[in-house]
Image (cartoon, rainbow, N blue to C red; front, side, top):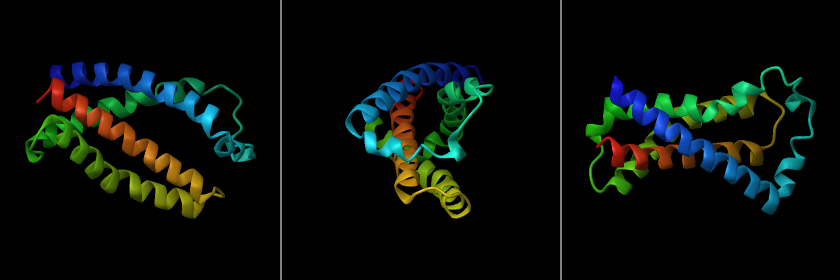
Length: 135
């Protein structure tokens, strides 16, 4: 359990930095994507902002547990293991969630695809880091 918590915390910090850096780069280079968020669906009173900012840690601890449980199934170099881990997680968890999200909310396909690829990117980065620090 200590290994899961330790690797989850390390990966959480790295994902936090990478995710928010990526957010600022995306806003700078693909601003039209964020125009879609001018929608009442995404308006917040700010009382739950801490939940948004803690996302990198929530996902990193969940993926750390997933890695610890199934790491023996992934073979090859640490990069290949991380890539496979991210793809498996994305197909098993993200794809169904994105499907139900798109089918039930008034959002665009571009939004859902951007969320899917963002989640895939996070999972691959986390998988590579887990394969390196907790082989």
